[in-house]
Length: 265
Image 1: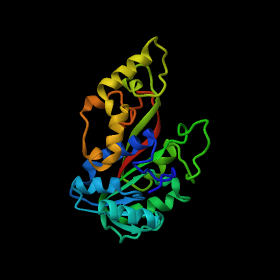
Image 2: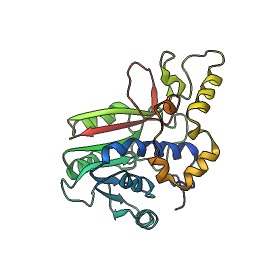
Image 3: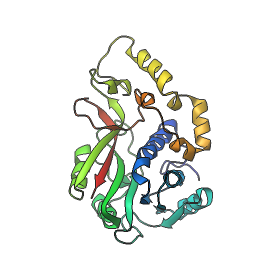
């Protein structure tokens, strides 16, 4: 598929977009094993294929683009359906997990989309969902032309809490974090200005999370994104890794670019 910026295409996406999506699907793996799974806005299909190989009992990818659905089916053997996120083409209570990465900001009515996720989920089902944080995403840059409604962290949580009994919040790509927090090692700009800190952070990243800064690793990963998702990293590799997904910490002072939630009915 051609990379236009609307969907992540492994061969064409920039390095940040590529690793952001890879790590989100890695994060979702434990939640899909033995489950009936819907990957809504499945796009190119690499993530759906990884979820299926990770042990999903069944996997259906839904995307509004017929081209994307055909591509996902042909390249990865993913079962797909063409459909709108605001009118998901699945029966009520037919899946145990809905995976929705970078979808909600692409719909004009986020409430309707979440209502549809609730409708197709069985009792006790989970929604694993991500969205850009409006307060940090593309700050001072041109708006993303494919986004219809971006949310703040608080707005995102309110929408989820109104529909799910439990909502756990995680973060990705911190732009900043307090000097007292190890998350400052993964942030793009530390709140403190200790001489040599940026070089120290780079050395730690080079040692612990070479995967995301080595161009040769990136090119190999592009060739097989499914296996890249299925290859789990040791915890130390995430110490200074901006793409790693961590539980939200109020004490860290972090400002994330992306918010991820696991919401349970």
